[in-house]
Image: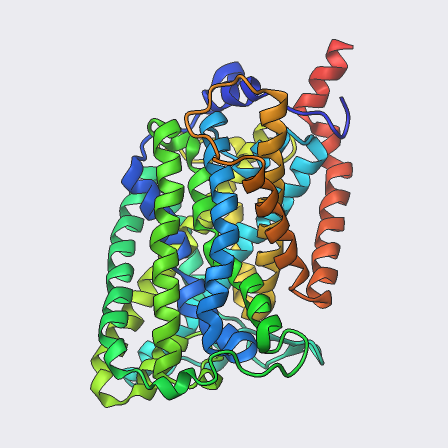
Length: 487
């Protein structure tokens, strides 16, 4: 036992089914719900917010290629997630998978970095929501006070963090709080709100692509890959740098795996949800990225409301489309925040069930069947972060945490095939070990592309996580307590 102890797959499944006194979640999600959950989380900040900033600062019109590179890593990792989700159909996603294969300390570190992937991701999306809401209200002559509707902090590699003069990003706090209320009502209500939101925002993106293509100025695509001006600033290094950040935009399929414990027939529905959602999102991202950079010069798009800027630049003939896109973005970003925080709550629920987080986080409300204390604390923490933090720092940290978790899931798939080769696998990764090895290598390469300053912040975050593990998690681990009793 000790730091490298694993939790057997059967023990994870038993806990998920409510045996041995564990609180149980209800299975109420079908294939369509899971696909739309993946799309709901994925079609958010990546397409509405991050696309413009990455085109303007790193990739230019080749941001479409960056999306394709990021999608390739997602495909390999997604196949591994699909297999593990059918073998271990419980809450926890990458945390549970690594606990069953790579040991408790690695699982804790993965769970800690999933905070970047989910809660801080939701906060980043909320910053984008604020930008689109401000742009929408200004169309109607309503101007929110700057000191109450923008981030108090800004960041640049040259100057570091600076105070902007604002007090709080009020719209970001509001939408996170609203999502917390919806999440507290139960999984069916959450799925219903998400499904409606996804239908609206995907419809709006299709409309943007179909209409916008007729207003594209192809001169804006030349040069398609701007000349390199420094490390990670345009050229091919910029394309890969943008791909590393835009990997943040694809975390939706991982959110599907966190719902495995609340899915009906998860061995069948979860792989369909993961891969179906990914296919929809890749197509939307590449097409919308091309149309956006065709409507306006990429240098103009460094803002949270980049799609609205592109439409506005195309001229008054598309003013009506800008109104629709803004409304869809406002609603669509809300659903992305909803699913991100949903995923974080289920991660904390799984960690608390194993004793690595306070036991109150595993407490399930008997009426709505949700981990109500985890919902409360995730909502509060996300609101604080979204209310003060700048978008660019959040996006890069989210990508690093996500990429690390995905690389380890690829490794975990290989380990479980070796350790437990005869366990039934309703979905099997084709061409293993090639797919898992290539997936892990691509994830690590994208992590390296994100630059030293982000690695320093990521390293500090990971060290903090390990300190918490040694101070609390290791001392309260249910698995290690079982070992001590056995001895």
